Image (tube, rainbow, N blue to C red):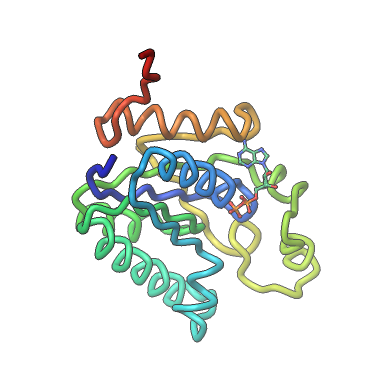
Length: 183
Ligand code: ADP
């Protein structure tokens, strides 16, 4: 089923679960024949924003680049799933305003849980001073005030978070409800 283009913007701390949820949602949408692309923050930094660091200015440029690409794709009928810390509320809102269909998903995982997970070993490096300006340690993270979806990963399993996103897309008629054929 080819649906409307839209941007699913996952924001949250490093290790919150953005990539995990994004890949799960991608998988289900592909099964339902949607055109999907994931723009993952780590990959974007590797391929599109290699020269950028982690100052406020550089982070803003990085997020605006992701927003620009997401818009190009979504206006051509693609469901774009962005998984990037995207710490600044103002920039996320700027992208929301310039996008036709924008769904913000706050992956709400407290710092102490992300730090305990330390999936990529980055929190240990940030605490020991090997990484500077790490989000929520030395740098700001501004949680969304009115996101369309909140995934509370300390209370909801990975599957529940993914199902919640899919259910909301169905509720908003971005994708058709999945129905089993009985005949
Ligand atoms: P991010 O992309 O936000 O940096 P990742 O998806 O790379 O985070 O890592 C999140 C980690 O948290 C994974 O190891 C994942 O298995 C774990 N996790 C535990 N519970 C959840 C949940 N409910 N949703 C998403 N991830 C979860």
